[in-house]
Image: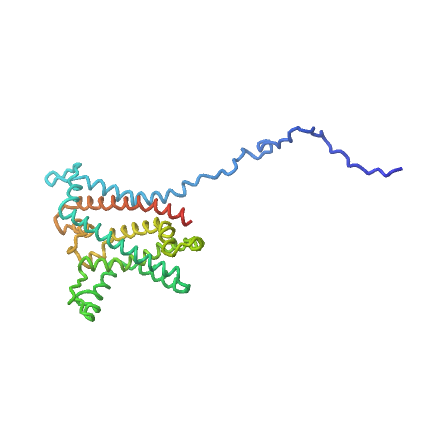
Length: 319
């Protein structure tokens, strides 16, 4: 007789028919697992950031609110009562205070332009250098020099390029008409820490330029100048403009360097604010100083409103 292959025994229980739905497992409640938990659901973490927002409210919100309130408040010297008025704001935008605001904007624009050009050229030289050690040295030095500002920088420049400074006496710069305590001197002092800051800022953008783009342009017959004019500079434009805006904000908010070097001989809004708060001009001008501070905050917000979209566009191109 032919061999008969043993067939496996049928499984116990009903056999599902063809086309029938697969059996549904019991719900978590039926298994005693409690309420079902949605996939991907996370516990609320907002209590963790409460201290951060409290810090912002105390350290930034409270001073900002005080500044805005004082800028639009006038105190009556006879009765001592305060009232709402725009006299402080209008006064901060007229006369010598308007000159100080204009002087700060001019100084910031000029130094930002020079720092952007010089810093970009230095960063490009570092990126294209075949020596990796040069990049490490330049980046380390830039990180240190970008934070060397304020009163120590002013004293260093006075000892070097002041009236009796070492370099001034060695090269007789006083005979050429050069004066450190002028607009030119402030530009030199500001560039000392702004150029390294621009180098650190623009280096990642230059690293983002892909070598394949230049190779593709060369294969199509484009020269190096045409590559930079039609590819490199348009791609780097958001990063360069963002760096220039950052340089402007840095120069506009600098106070200690100018205060130590030139004092009140140069009309700058930061020095005028300090003089008004200390009562060096007229007593009772604290609210006028707050109005000038409000003007600076408005300009800073405009700078941020320009810089943030530029950073996003640069990240989209070079990311």
